[in-house]
Structure formats: structure tokens, C-alpha cells
Image (cartoon, rainbow, N blue to C red; front, side, top):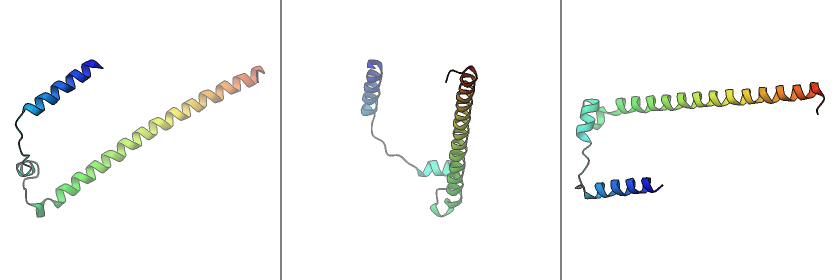
Amino acid sequence: MRKISAITTLLVGMVMAAPARAFEYKPLLKQVFGTSDPSELGGPIFALVAVAAILFFWIALRIGKRRQRRMIETYDEQLQDYASRLRRGKL
């Protein structure tokens, strides 16, 4: 825990020592989308949001399927254990 605090303190100190700079987003937009004109960015930004939404739901489905598989396997194990105890007459 002390290592994490020391590293955090070091990083905070480095960031505070650096000169403050304004973030220029227009060159970044021009580099990524080819333009920084807001009227021409509707389509690319919509596509980016759509891809992010599809990725989010795909990941959620994968997590849900894994969780469902684990629940089914756990239920099967419990059912097999119950059946074996029932056969032995230990209930």
C-alpha cells in the first residue's frame, strides 16, 4: 500500500511541476477525421458512437453468456450431488 502512495505522490508531483498547456482539439480532429468543421463531423462522430455501442453490447453479451454457463454448470453439479445423496439414502 505504501508503494502505491509513493508512486501516486511522485506522479502528482511531476504533473504539478509541468507547465500548464491548453489542449488543442482542432488539430486532433483534423488528423483523425480529415476535417475540423463541425458541420462535416456529424457522420464520423455518429459512426464512432455506433461502433462504441455495438462494442459495449457485444462485450455485455459475452459476459452474460459466461455467467449463464457458470450458473448452469453450478446447478448441474448441485443436482448431481443431490441425486447421488438421494440414491445413497442420506437425505
